[in-house]
Length: 545
Ligand code: NA7
Image (tube, rainbow, N blue to C red; front, side, top):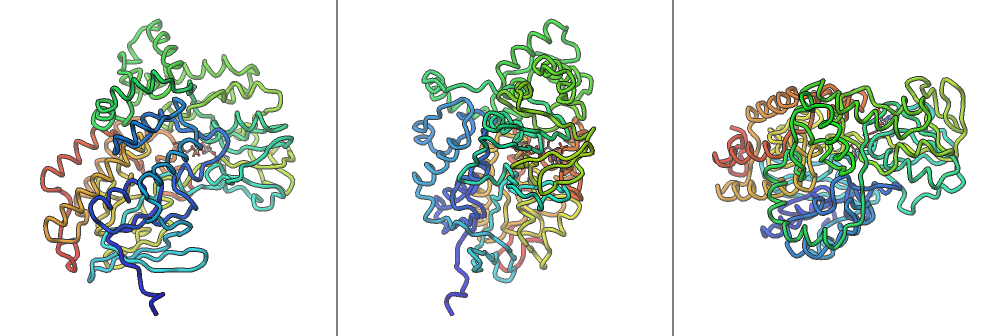
């Protein structure tokens, strides 16, 4: 029965977001027969799913775009400094069309399982599409599953009993939602909530924001991208791209720091903060050298932001409730907003501080806190994601000896260079845990990983061996190194999703690697030493000695 025969490929890519699309194109360029399986009905990944009002990238459009095709880079005209979700999705679709990617993408297809067949040196992959399962095989398996793609609903009793609609920002209805005349509850005040709240407040009759932890947010200072801006970028693209790739710790251009926050005098401190508050973006964070390593330096910047919040929000109690105090600034991803704090001056918006009045339950009619029940027409959960590992662990992946990835990662994710896993030959993760990923401009990190995966495949082929895997000792050393780098900073002080802290039971491990520039130096040093830390073996013998 031919229907049950597995389809054969050289490479299988899981996901058709920005990572998967670029990977697919690159594999084709290497002459490999590649396919991408994608759960959605279209390309774009994050930008396909996160269609909530106000969704926008917090990296500038001219930097949050592919650099691998000169003509594409020249011709695509972004309209704003920070692109909105619809524009980024249009860009993703444009790229898919322009490079004819969709002929090798299987939409509405979920990868359920993948098993390494050591004897034949292939990955056997099981997919499901509309209730039908199918099998496919490939020499290479590349997980381009995204870092913030497994949406997480809150564990609140009764949430399934609510009579009206419950939305999640990360899985927003494609037809949109009309909040006009409605009373709406938003739960969650991370980046997504902070973007959605001002928009929903404008549409809805009433909006109640349920806040557990106040977050630091700085103005986006978004504006149209003028012809002069665009021309300036085009004139300097090569050098700016190179700087972002090789020298910028976050893969994003930034103004250099002016000194230490701890020692600079009050006048200079104020002046620089005021200027960078208006400029917005990563420049605000980059003002001083010591903010991520010195608590007092960090507190000085945090105080500045709290003063800003108090100056914007008119009701003093609401202002205090909105002031973040739980964690050092920047140890959770800084939020970037357009009129977030101002929204709380609107008469139709109120804030519930869940620290004072926790939610007891969601009822069919609304939300019940310790102070009573409030009815709502709709609930919006801006409650985040099972970040970095959620989408990978949703697949039953088994490596050498049938070892399950869920067992390998039981104490936290382990990968060499955030790219390959010992015991899982010929499998790569694009922006996996242990690489800069979410602490960087994702596009820069994606492009580097796509390049590295191509180089590793070529290195394997050059050795007449079809199998490459991370060495276990190298992986252990890398995981330890990632932890040591993080421990030198204030990052581990926050109960953040970088630490897995937002998912009950998830191991608390700082998952991303700090520093795009440092990461590249280390990877290139390993590559120059004949790919130190990787084992190459002929097909059929396993990759581990
Ligand atoms: P985040 O940053 O994880 O924010 C989730 C928010 O939801 C945060 O304020 C949480 O409060 C809140 N939350 C989560 N669960 C609950 C429950 N049960 N009750 C009340 N509040 C809850 O997700 P985002 O989607 O905003 O942003 C993710 C990333 O996407 C962002 O960093 C950018 O990189 C893009 P908490 O802080 O846990 O107290």
